[in-house]
Image 1 (cartoon, each protein chain N blue to C red):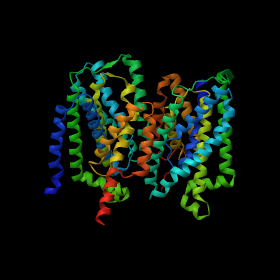
Image 2 (tube, rainbow over the protein chains, first blue to last red):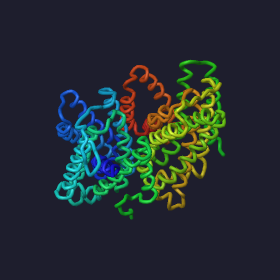
Image 3 (cartoon, rainbow over the protein chains, first blue to last red):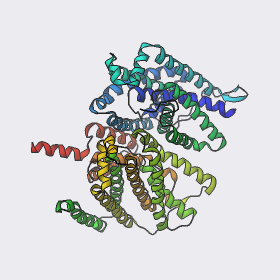
Image 4 (cartoon, each protein chain N blue to C red):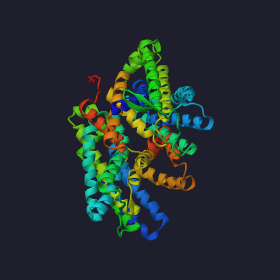
Length: 287
Length: 308
């Protein structure tokens, strides 16, 4: 039971990260390898604001959301649009965007190391709460609730609004979306920016209960990618379920075997997915 | 066989011979720089042989390099094997590992492969640390040999020459021809009866082999092997960046990237030791945006313009 609860709570944050990445890759067609660094940047902001002013990370969250949105929008417009224009096909864009965002991830790590080269340790809401017969840290529970709220909001936005419909249309087919009068460039930029925003916010939440440092971003990128692939590219619902699965498997491995093996367990899942369901848990096989 | 086809071979022999006498002329600092140049040349040339035609960005060099170095360390310290035995075993293990990874990921689209290799070094490091701590006892792994820097230089030179020879032979073989078709259009390649997955897996195995071999050869330079040191993700990126800088569509392309970048990297690590990661990122971005086809691509463009 402990494992299920703590896995679920962890999975909530993973779901948020993966949703962010899924929007960027599924809609804007940018395989963003700097995703994890953006998350750590959000965490660093929360840590820095908390230790200097004592302001709650839950307030910093809103500032990070706005900055994450604006920053990702600008990055897309300035750095990634030229790549989209330059590439003749999807394969070329994938290679270029992987390399470009890779450079960005290194740059960001470098910047963060120069700001704060040690662990981002701070204590926020670190008190035990009894929940369904087990004890969890309050900060994990709060982070999970926020993740559910944000994830739910995102889900409604995608499924109930006009802008969300346009985003989903571009995810299915940029060409067809263009033909029915959707401004594909704008929607892609929007999806990329929203993805960045969600990732940054997830970083703030994660920083309340996991101690991060500047170089840990790539692990989160890996996990987010594995979740997105497991759930199916462009499938938000799949991402959520996949994230919960990964959260539970990781917490099971961490409790039963060794906390140092969580990445290896994520790899094991990845391997199984690649072998048996490369199209994702809920994806349809490509025609 | 016409004369022009053999030209690279004719040119290559005196170059290798010249490189072989270099340690008699320089020592100390410049010899270690030369070791780095050779190490990166071997790694990025063999990387480009796979990633150039297939356009699959392999980020696994650090993982295979680490497997090479680590196996030498654990073999000598935990199992009392000789350095030379491990030098043979390490690349074989890495080749098998590469085959398994390739069989799983290379049948699918390139993205899966990139993602899989991205965290590979880190994952293997975690696994190895876990095994080390729980089953082998966390003793240090010492690699004590009589080899000096000059010996390592010569061994690396031999490997580098072997990589070039392999690349040259590959260019003339059926497999190389298949890879070129595959690189232009994978569907066409499949339709003319090329087993594309098999071709990719074989090539990927060779990069795993050479990376582990290089890792094993330079292991004595560390003396003390720690998983955190040998499984360095940074190495994978350095190799990619150098190959891209030089140009990945010519066999000798990466060499043109390795030499300036190794020197630049030396300068950066000496004068800006805290900004290496940032510098790596900036270098990456500059190359992707301004010289996407590498130095070779730039040179060829200028030559073409001159002719017109």
